[in-house]
Length: 394
Ligand SMILES: Cc1cc2nc3c(=O)[nH]c(=O)nc-3n(C[C@H](O)[C@H](O)[C@H](O)COP(=O)(O)OP(=O)(O)OC[C@H]3O[C@@H](n4cnc5c(N)ncnc54)[C@H](O)[C@@H]3O)c2cc1C
Image (cartoon, rainbow, N blue to C red):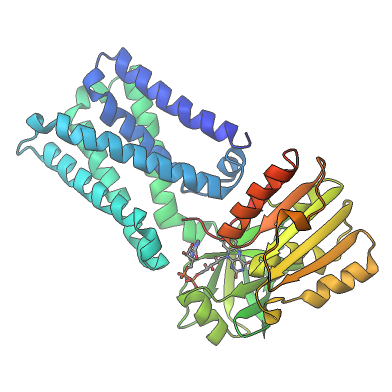
């Protein structure tokens, strides 16, 4: 299991919290006590920290763990709300607890409704959970101050996770957008490759260290364009010169397609992702669905030597969607290790693929396509390795 370190970290954190509350003889507070830890972990998992990305094998798994911790907190607080009702009165501490819980319930519901909300509204509302967390901490420390401000296991564990939760929340909400974006630059070229795909070339002030297949969060500073960072796979370039290939998916990307100009200022944080094509071994199959071509494009555009035989399947609905088709065809004509297959107007299935127990399959495309192909590949060749990148975090 590739996320084992991350899972063990979460289980260990919950276990030590359970032990601390049990050992202090405060078993009736175990539920809300564990909720304080799972909330701290929820914020920590939103930080995009590199060590967590490694422990969880990708930030999409970190975000999944983040969601699970949030839901677990919700369940624990739901029971706390009922079991402690008799203690609630007019005290400030109790009212902080009330506000925290109802705020938290409302925001988690909104966060879970993510799919029907515009991404930016979803993100903004989502952030108010930090306010609920701070009120929840005030509630806990005001009610149990004598136990939580002393020298014992309970105070240490609760204090430790409170610091982690507060620091992570402050970092992701107030600091990440400024301090994490160290690569500044300008757009030097904008090309509209078809009716809904745009390609941009950036010139950065300092080189971006990335591996073929990785992605980065891109911020664009141009009047009329949203400044929030959006994730895009790096579709080529090296050092200070980087390409992104962007398909219209919603308001932001449509705005980029329609209005992005040469000369606009940009910023990038760092490279993320585990679709590491160079580490895939001597027998590889690459599968791209539509704009899912971008991670593979970086490898081929840079003309990097292949680690062995690579069969690349590029599946598109319409001929005009097959952007950079000629780049792949030219590479295939020059390198006998690279075999290019354009799949157009029909579904790619595992029967199209030459699979062996040594094959490493890399997939990037629409979620449904990847899920269906991954199932078919596992049925056909259970020993083949599969790595895939989804273009969505929610
Ligand atoms: C790892 C990764 C790599 C990607 N690489 C590419 C690429 O190479 N080319 C490409 O065209 N698209 C890529 N995408 C998708 C791209 O990020 C979204 O299409 C884009 O952010 C949509 O923004 P929007 O406001 O236009 O659309 P919206 O309608 O607001 O969003 C459409 C969907 O995009 C996702 N999304 C939107 N904003 C963000 C954000 N700030 N952070 C995270 N996800 C967001 C959400 O899942 C949302 O449901 C990638 C996504 C991920 C997660």
